Amino acid sequence: GALHTIARDGEGVRIGALCTMNELQREALIKQHFDILLQACDHFASDQLRNNATIGGNVCNASPAGDSLVPLLVLDAQVELQSKPNGSAQVRRVPLAEFITGPGRTQRGAHELVTALWLPSPKPGFVGRFYKFGTRPALDISAISIGIGGVRQGRTLTDVRLAYGAVAATPMRCKGAEAVLEGQALDAPTMQAVAAAARDEVRPIDDVRASAWYRRELVHNMTLRMLQDESQT
Image (cartoon, rainbow, N blue to C red):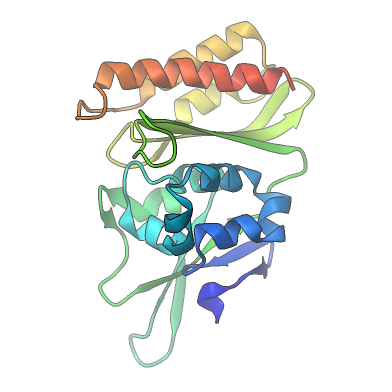
């Protein structure tokens, strides 16, 4: 049914809420348009869990460290919710950035089901990179994860998105750092300024996995490294 289907939908692609991470990895539409989501699937737990973990479950879980949430933020994903208040189906879409309100908390109403994620088709020239840092790759819950996206024209990025996981109460876009990078050439001063802006903007806590100071340093260093990698391609 529709909950298991990945298909074109208007100016984007609709991913049914019950699609698993392994199903996403095999889907041609995802490979063609949303490579950053595939990069996150590669980091997602074990193969066994990828067979069972669904995109809808990852979104409803609303973990600050949810692996798929960072690339979905970079891709401007919207959450599709359905309810039947008077016997007739009502559907609404909420930007993912607004849908998650805190650890384990979302805007889903008591009688609503998350039925899909909707991703607008990226503009031509869109590039995306995902990075996850944990004490052990894949099976570990993230110490931090980072997603960077934008439309590449020469050495310049526009329509910039910088998203971070496990650095605040919810996965977050760093709007200030995005503004520093928007329309600028990927040169050393710009990349340093973006990394510093992101470090200042995230709101990490101390926990058993990492201190707030360490997470800020990781945000700075890994943002800088990802931008440097992009500048060299």
